[in-house]
Amino acid sequence: MVGRNIGLEDFKNRRLFQNDVVGQFSIQEFFLNVNRTLHKSYDSMLDIRENIARFIMEALENLKSKESVIVFGPGSCNDIPLDLLAKNFSQITLVDIDIISAQKAIERLDISLRSKVLLKQMDISGLGKLFTRIQDLSNINASASEIESALKSYECESIELLPDINKEYDLSISSCVATQLTTPFFTHILKDKYINESTYKIITSIARKAAFNHCYLVRKHTKDTGFSIITTDIFEWGHVRNNPVSLAIALPSLPEILSFHEFIEEFLKKYSDYMLAGSTILFDIGTFFNNIVARGWYWEIENTIQSYRLYIVIGALLQPKLR
Ligand SMILES: C[S@@+](CC[C@H](N)C(=O)[O-])C[C@H]1O[C@@H](n2cnc3c(N)ncnc32)[C@H](O)[C@@H]1O
Image 1 (cartoon, rainbow, N blue to C red):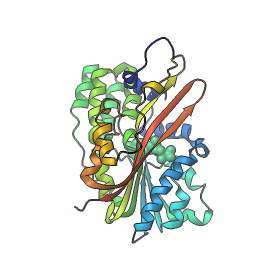
Image 2: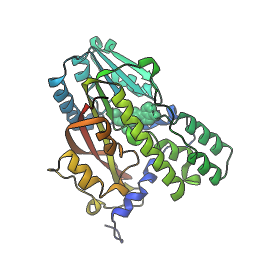
Image 3: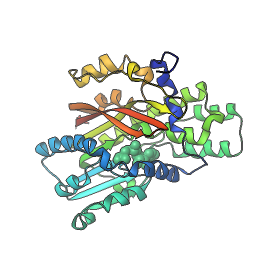
């Protein structure tokens, strides 16, 4: 460890890691760039695909119908066992803002299975108008206070976001999307010029609402007799370039024996200040779902001399609560 005490407070700087994409991109271009950096991770993420596959198999054992499955935020399907889905369901719908990466994932499938997959390009954050407004303000070099008041004026947009796929699925999967809906693109638009403690606080509260809306969206598109799988990255740590940090001593290590309920009550509440914005979806799950089983794992997303990043991820197999 270098020279100073590293502790939980260091997690609060994690947003710096999300600011790597230079230039000013549209939301599609932004996530295409992010996903491109992950495309090469397919082989190294085998164990994570196996974790999701285990949830899928558990759902399959209990599903009456295996007609349809929807995946929110598949990206390059590094963590989604697309072949397992294609072999077991008649139709697979993939919804992402970046469908170029998802298209590449489809090309990994056996040719006989590819026609089962439907791709939908869509912004599922419900923040589209706000993104545009903030991007416009940033482009004209608006003042920090103008940006802040525009962020504060945010009202939840209606969540009827999927008009052309407005149906219920036997299985719905949201895989590490909740933390991506708000903070990454805002920090990209605003960069260090506008991001300060105050704006970050507002963005974090928007992320909390967007995560709740996302949980609602996943429930809405799941049959009462179906299942959902929600996974989310909850803590991120690592080091960048000339700021090597050994965070091992600061880590909240994953509890092995807690139930999902205890995990939320005893573990997450303790560390809630350090959770990634949007991973609060774990607190929202109980509103819409009963949890059947939850498991955690580590996702080493980057490991180079220059930078190292690791997430703790929690995944849960869920049964929809009746409406
Ligand atoms: C961290 S990735 C999830 C991991 C991904 N399943 C994989 O295997 O690499 C998050 C995904 O959410 C998508 N996403 C982010 N914001 C979105 C939005 N507003 N609407 C739709 N998809 C979005 C990104 O394009 C990306 O594919």
